[in-house]
Length: 339
Ligand code: 13P
Ligand code: SF4
Image (cartoon, rainbow, N blue to C red):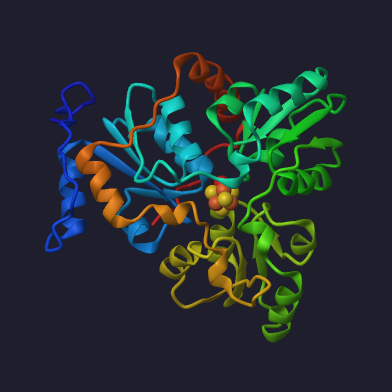
């Protein structure tokens, strides 16, 4: 007989109190044991270190991860990503326990958009519809009309009546890219991602000279002077998919370099070159927030069941409206390409 959601045993959520990790334990085996004991699902973003991606039940972009978080029947969602992603999971699945390895894993885009200033911005432009990138706090989501991710933003903008003016926050580069792509006039909040704004156009052009014909694939959080050189611009899932379907054998990757781990796994015969910043060094483009999550902290959060994400119910209900609009306005789910 199949085990249904109703007769499946509940996970044991009792916290342990582990402060020091025994250096002799097998972390992977312990994480796996806790995953089963707690009936937990581990979700990871492509910018997490390779070992975390490999132990996760699912690896994806922001939209994929939101969809997984909404659909899972696990008791615990272990979110290996940054705080706004874990908060989105809690907004969608309030009855589940959502934990993340390090509560300090924030995002420069979230930091650039304090709720009080955003509320004022909205009040100054009452006739505008506000489209907000998912990289923001739950409070800013609650103040927004529709949430978007980099994989559905263009599709959603195209559904907004052309006579309706748009406010886009908090990423000025993604907003600028969308305004250009859709031909829409947008009022842009002036936030940016500290990782994607660091790529050097000069170094990129040099690299293109050394690898003629290698497609440049870039995330739309990059500034326009970088995107103008890109053969493909898209979310992390979209650029991964491009690599899998392209005939090219070498690619210049202009986004957080940990995605290359997944590219190498799915296309081992191809070559991936991370784009450099001004120092000519691609390592500085690691996201410092994503890097706060480690295998050790992943183990500890699953053992101790902390830190847990909490979103005040009044904010959650309002944020759910804008997140649910995003879900309803998103393109249909693509066939699974996860590894
Ligand atoms: P996507 O994974 O949705 O492309 O977003 C990237 C990002 O901003 C993660 O910080
Ligand atoms: Fe935020 Fe940029 Fe890091 Fe993504 S890569 S979490 S946008 S700081």
